[in-house]
Length: 186
Image (tube, rainbow, N blue to C red; front, side, top):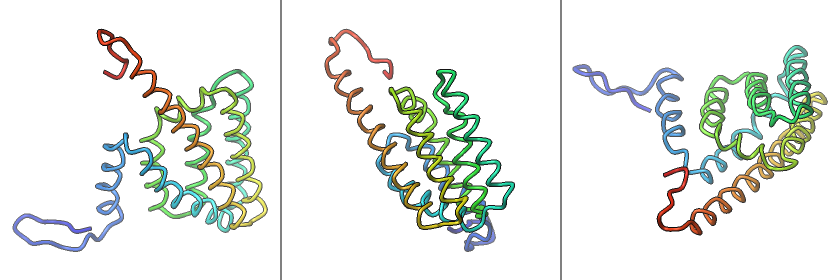
């Protein structure tokens, strides 16, 4: 929140970039703090969805539709749809028309990239993710910030439950390995 200029003094940060850079770095460096990242996502992303419901232009709504069409094609081919999943969240943040939210969301999406890929490999999860995205988009099309906020929160809570369940399974699996065998992580 402050800038230290050598030989000049300490000043209140005057740009969004000077505020966001350390925050984005902290998010990316602490990838293991999933619960904290999801806490932040539950605060940030429902508001992004609500703002998008209020502010999205017709071309931005169409962009969200195109991304979901691509996600559906990826899933139909047996893929996870992770690229389209990430693109949806980014397009949503752009539609909210708030550069601070966009940059924070980008940092969180990047910090969860590997976790998102693993989560979307769970049986049925890609289709459930797409269904959640469609519900969010429906509220945005209707211009209903309350429904968009609620749909995003439900989507995030489902993702969080899935990811935390996966992590618990991974930890149990690592605990059962024979002492002479190393886990993939380490």
